[in-house]
Amino acid sequence: MTESPLRWGVLGTGWIAQRFAEDVLLLPGHTVSAVGSRVRHTAETFARQHGIERAWDSYEQLVADDEVDVVYVATPHTFHLAHATLGLEAGRPVLVEKPFTTNAADARRLIALARDRGLFAMEAMWTRFNPLIGRLRALVADGAIGDVTAVYADFGFISPYDPAHRHWSPELGGGALLDLGVYPLYFTWMLLGAPESIQATAATAPTGVDANTGVLLGYACGAVALLHCNLTSDSPWTAVVTGTEGRIEVPSPFFSPHTLVLHRKGAEPETFRTDVLGNGYAYQAQEVARCLRAGELESPVMPLDETLAIHGNLDTILAQLKRQAVIPSPIPLA
Image 1 (tube, rainbow, N blue to C red):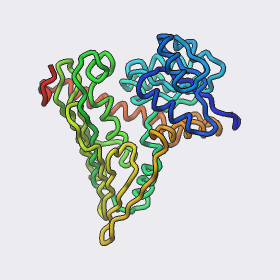
Image 2 (cartoon, rainbow, N blue to C red; image 1 turned 180 degrees about the vertical axis):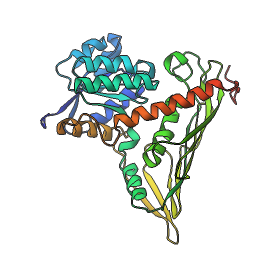
Image 3 (tube, rainbow, N blue to C red; image 1 turned 45 degrees about the vertical axis):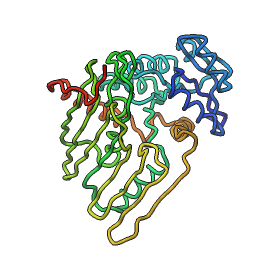
């Protein structure tokens, strides 16, 4: 690709699609040229709100639009495979909202298709591209806190119970883990890689999805990770990385931080700050543009093999939860 503006097509018109479009339009060298929805009125409203030229009332029309360079898939989890497949089969690179798919088998299929077609694909794990997360990774790699011994990360909020809402519907990939728990898990993976052991437990909603979930990861190096996600309480949204020589605290929201605090043995705390651009989604769009212009088919920051391996971990966790006796949700959901 040349340095001409990167033309995005947004597939879906929900909350995350709105935030992503807002951020893309903050970036020089980027534009949103089209949006697709299953309903014309919805597509036209989205286009009018964001100054987008073309609004399509089918996803097939969106991916066939020759004014689209790359498709951002922003539909609910259970549709990611089908809708990203539409884009790839139309010859469009894709950025697929997290989780990439709802299971490892589907992730493997989508990755194989992208590689077979020679097209760029990436999971939209925006946390990986936040400037302070990059700083955190560099500090850990440089030994600022010694050897990592533990990771603690949490993300949860109260989602009013509605069996038809995507948070609570198994048909829409509901549950705390796939929507929120991916953040603590991906955060841990970027520091410690693949775990040697996984233990999970959860309280369950009447629809059968996980409502309040804890995960313990163990590593060959002796490190552990304690991860929590839930849809039933407003939890801290923080993370801490501890090491043999100190710790790094990531205040709320740890998945899109504005601040890091480094505590070294025998030294005063060091605070790192940044002003996050827009909603925080612009950085992943910049990485997509960099990759496409460099002719790279995947990002080294969020590689496809890592996405696939993490989906294998998600499968393991969900399988453990399915085998457990049902634990009722800690709050009334009726």
